[in-house]
Image (cartoon, rainbow, N blue to C red):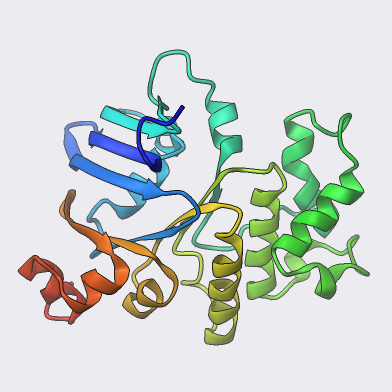
Length: 254
């Protein structure tokens, strides 16, 4: 049973890289089947927070967390949490498209196979469903044995989204997923995000103010590790409550 109406909730969450504090007492609720955007200047803690949601930062020596991150009311930092299961439930798409040097088919099938699901599921069905969900099936269905690295940049990013969806996550984290793409591919990914939120909860980090305004339902503005403001996107961009937010989104700093 969820403790709140949020799919994910950070409660007084702080994060450290050794002695350096990257996040300071962040309190934030991520609504289910909504797109939440995190904005702020470089080094403000956006990607740290995103990666903290599925404990991707655990692999960094000296990194440590304080406070709680609740997923459906359960603290993902509690002792005994299965991190592999957590990352199955909370998938990740990175800034640069990073297909494996494998075929398109094997890129998508990789996650389910690592999790040992290939004995339970039809990989043909999983691959087709995932590629359809990522709006890529019609472009690649007759070349599934082609290398994923041979696709265009926009197609590679959609392949990486398909790969993340193949393990049937509940939450999709996207770390500047369009920063390496041309405008046309960017708009296609944004359209895809709006389609995917019907089935997934999405959290995106972006430096692009227009993108945050276009695709997200909620926006959080971080500055030097502090969550300065968090509100419905339309409200935050039209009537920011904090002068620092207004200065950032209007380009006076950052």
